[in-house]
Every structure is written in structure tokens, then in C-alpha cells.
Image (cartoon, rainbow over all chains, first blue to last red; front, side, top):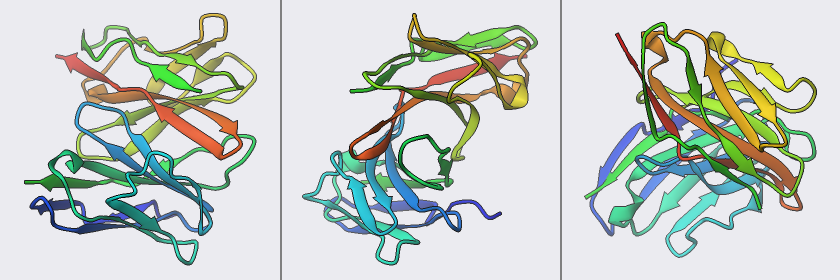
Amino acid sequence: EAGVAQSPRYKIIEKRQSVAFWCNPISGHATLYWYQQILGQGPKLLIQFQNNGVVDDSQLPKDRFSAERLKGVDSTLKIQPAKLEDSAVYLCASSLVAGPGITEQYFGPGTRLTVT
Amino acid sequence: AQSVTQLDSQVPVFEEAPVELRCNYSSSVSVYLFWYVQYPNQGLQLLLKYLSGSTLVKGINGFEAEFNKSQTSFHLRKPSVHISDTAEYFCAVSGFSNTGNQFYFGTGTSLTVIP
């Protein structure tokens, strides 16, 4: 089966500009996650979708970050305007279900964002 | 609340030597534990997971981990490492709350295998 797809793989922007990342999860996976991984740190969950609804966005900086998964399949994460501290790898992951009992998360290759 | 502590940020080890990467967790609910590996410029790949049952879990590439509830640990081990094991390793904990499954990752351990 195809894995989690993300694009672009790399992006360089200037501060105060906008940027968008795209993720296509594994077919049939109801749950989609966006993580931010700053250099030298572990991934930090930004937002979790269950189908097209938001389950958890408690760590999403909502003044500048937004995400959507309109049809419950692919998702877009946007940053507007970007700050220097947003430089990181943005990882998308998906899993089959969410709820009691755990399911494995499958990760995409990530998008490396550099804000100058 | 759940959290993960990886005690070693960098672990150098000679090729064919054994290695242990340490992970401790804290959680107020039943936990599920994972180890992921991240090769340079790649996404995270699952090495192994503990959900229930036997406390010794075997994963891919010859890795294994032991769940120790009394010590709240889930250390990763390999009896003989290869150059190709050089990568970043992340321990993660997950538990179910009223907002669904939540994953928390440690800060990672960089394993460098020395020829």
C-alpha cells in the first residue's frame, strides 16, 4: 500500500510570508496528525483529525497556524504569517482508527521549512 | 498527563557492540509504548510497540525492548549494532483520554555506530 504522502519536501520562505503544506494519508485511515519537529527535539503534536473533525488542537498556535481536512481525506496545514521560530520539519501521520486500544501511526517523509 | 524522558541525547557505540537506549515514562492512565527510528531526511518508522501481554517486545532490525511497569521504563536494546543502525531513536507513549489517543514523543537519542 502507498504510504503517507507529503509535499513539498522542502520550503524556504522569508518571515511574515505564508506557506502551506499538503498531506495525503494512507487510504482508509480515519485519523490524521500534524506534528512539528524542531531540530534536536521530538515531534510535537499540533493537531489531530478524526475524519474531517478536529479531535485535539490544543498545541496549535491558532493565531498563525490553521489546518483543515475538508473531505476527511487529505489535509492542508498553513502558517500565516511565518516566524523564524517556525523553522522545523512538519510531519504528517495517519492511523486506522482513534479510540480505546491503540493503533500504529504511519509517518510521511516530512516537509522541512526554513524561515529566513 | 503523560510524558516521556529519554535519558541520553547521544549514544556512541562501536560496531558489533551491544546498545541500550533508555526511556522512562509517566502516565496516569494505561499506556502503550513505542520506539520509532528516524534515518536522516526520512520520516519516522516504527521499530516496535508494547500494547499488552509479554513485557519483552521484539521489533524489526534485531531490536527489542522490555516494558517495566514498576520502574516505568521501556528501554530499547540490541545485542550487536551495525553501521546502518546510526539514526535518531524516539520513544513515545500513548494513552486514551477524552480527546482520543494522544501521542507524546521523547526528545530523541542519537545513536552513532563507530566502525
